[in-house]
Image 1: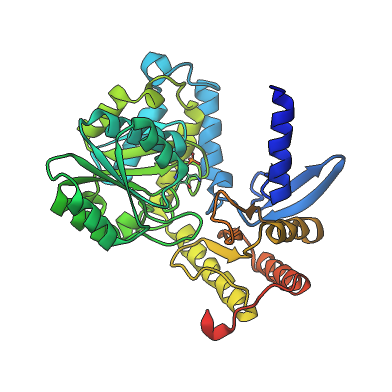
Image 2: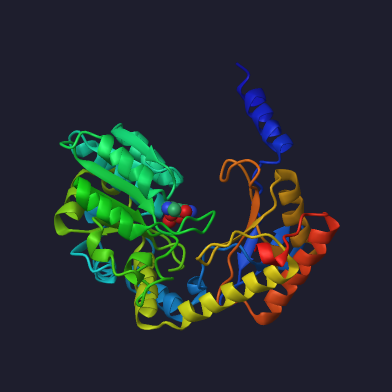
Length: 407
Ligand code: PMP
């Protein structure tokens, strides 16, 4: 086989479909988010980022940067090993205590990313609990799907956020087999929110464990940033809460929070936890500082909700269609991969506004979109510029508008 020709052809196909991913070369500026510098060949342009998952700008927060500097000066760069072999530093221990406290669980376990935490924890629970059946929401993130797949446990996919379908599927399963319901709180591409209380009720009725991915909610919702489950007073009803340190907390890493025994079980059996180098202590210290700040301060969360509502109102005024969800994620639906990429490219080249196009396979074909994520550090002028640019391009591309009453 001509391997290189094969790779070239598949990449050409992707480009023809408008689904080829182009990475933008960005330099973030300390304290300057959402401003960044884009490098393209010898050109360097100022851009405003409108699609970051650093939802609150904590990646540039002075307390987080100071904590990371402090740990670098104290401990140096790397952890020096896996958690098992010399890589558990005091900063990791403190971070896990902070996370257990955030979710009011006995224990927490940190992984190198949110992806790895889902993959490793779900994979371990589903494969090591004999006869376990996993009930997985149909729109679960790739990391959960891959973890469940890797476990080779029996999997039942229930219709997205549909309690009746979940109930019917739980009722149809062998009552004596262990069960695990895996789902998210805020879904990242549509921004809709799971009926967590109803899922917990079903879990109680059918003797199932619950595994909730709060990756797009931790730091953002609840009085201390514990996520949607905290906001709804449900944390104690969930078996496992999983989250990331890389989005609202602004650093990198992932975790689960659960009972002492469950965390110890995953710690002891999950290869994705055991056989990989621990996060650098500076990362652990930065994440802990971010979590502490967001536990003690509501300013970022309140300002975040306000700017999200403002952007939505302004899009409504222009009839630009966006998914009317109850979260901070604003998906502007374009419905065509080529137009979606054109909009994104033109926003960047002409207006200095960076919004990555979201195309298939991340979202279903025909629902290609610009996923806008306002943050409390975007200024009113940033919002004016965004809205004016979208208005201009919507007209230029002759994209459909939605009458105000329909929004
Ligand atoms: N879960 C969900 C729902 C996600 O959207 C993502 C990443 N986008 C992850 C897990 C993985 O988190 P991380 O980026 O920390 O690996």
